[in-house]
Amino acid sequence: GEDVEQSLFLSVREGDSSVINCTYTDSSSTYLYWYKQEPGAGLQLLTYIFSNMDMKQDQRLTVLLNKKDKHLSLRIADTQTGDSAIYFCAETTGANNLFFGTGTRLTVIP
Amino acid sequence: DSGVTQTPKHLITATGQRVTLRCSPRSGDLSVYWYQQSLDQGLQFLIQYYNGEERAKGNILERFSAQQFPDLHSELNLSSLELGDSALYFCASSVSGRIEGLYNEQFFGPGTRLTVL
Image 1 (cartoon, chains in turn orange, red):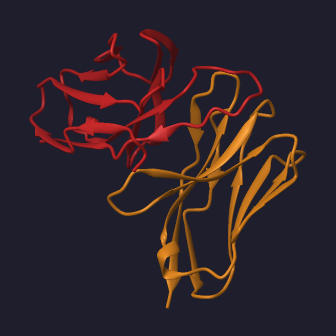
Image 2 (cartoon, chains in turn brown, yellow):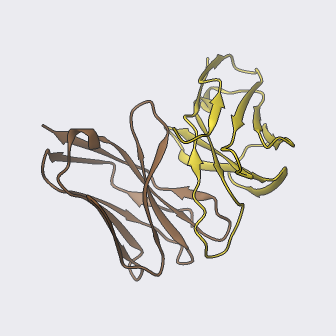
């Protein structure tokens, strides 16, 4: 469960939707997470999804999980300038420690 | 504010030196995790302690060691420092160490930025 990949950069216009993608390799992952890191700050958990779910919605955030393709995505509706940050997907297996992706830097253009 | 505190916030030192990073978990959390964020390696898990005992080990170098004390705070010791050890070191805590199939959220501290010159 240690190969988690993301595209490095994403730019969107304010008000549009952002979709950040992630692929993972460990089929035994139990939970998959999305974390947000703002400049100079720590990691903030945005949302998570259990591996037996396909979708989870939480206000402006929608997480989609395709277990067959080992693909996870985070959709942010009505993206705002305050959403500019680095977004990490992460997975845990039985050991509970997190394996993080490479991170996607989201830039929101006013 | 996650409730996890880390000190110091910044640390600047020279190659070959030894430093200690400190972490206080959230009240009631028994498990502490250390992560390293660097440009080369990204965010990677180093080590986990649960109630004073080592629980899991990741990509932690032999020059690095950690411990968790009876009051549950943890220290990460980095010795014989190299330029490549410059990174942001995060501590996280959770209530439990390992619960199969159950959600066990980790709360992250603000990190200690280590610069090795």
